[in-house]
Image (tube, rainbow, N blue to C red; front, side, top):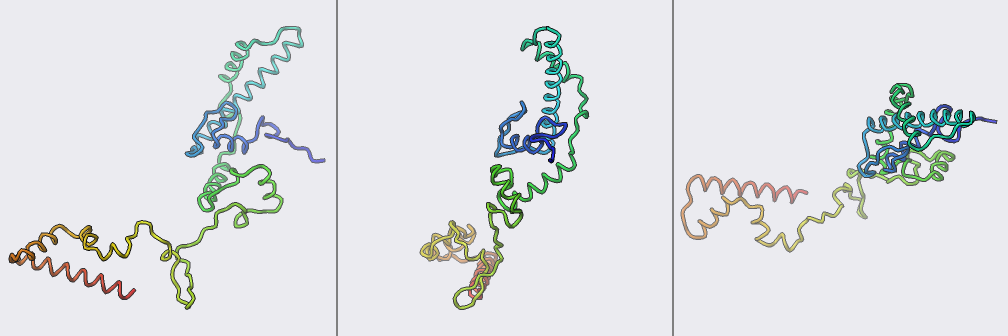
Length: 235
């Protein structure tokens, strides 16, 4: 029969994956700090909180073993104040590197978890334990993920009934686009029209003569508008 811990490890009071998931959910496991689950936390903060939680658990286990020895000798158990003092006593004497964490492996695993989340909109930490067991049993990873968001390229060609190809991005409706009636309205043209060109138009309407600079600017704007119209006709 295979012998293995149900939670944590052979020398761990709780599992690393469980702690990281609960910490990123903002639940503050093992007296760690609470974070905003919508913002998350950098890996250095996760690593620090995990190591600090291991130290607290190690100190509590040491105090509980000490308390058991006191009781077996016929002494009373620690009071709450004494218990906390003993925990702080052992915490102050635990070297930071006593309880190690495979930080490099965790960094690599977190990188791919973040990459998968960016490309699929979800990762395994957002699924229930039952769903994760099902994915592990049926190997539903990568493109087989049942809850992953399917991403389409905007450059994907779409064929119409006549066989003409159009990129997917060109077929997506734009809520900010103007209606056809607005395009024919002179006010729409004036919204993007340079003020200098408007002033020239006012002079022409009032019968005033244009200077050489104004005449040259008017011709430049006419040629610019003509080129733009030709591009629209070619499309």
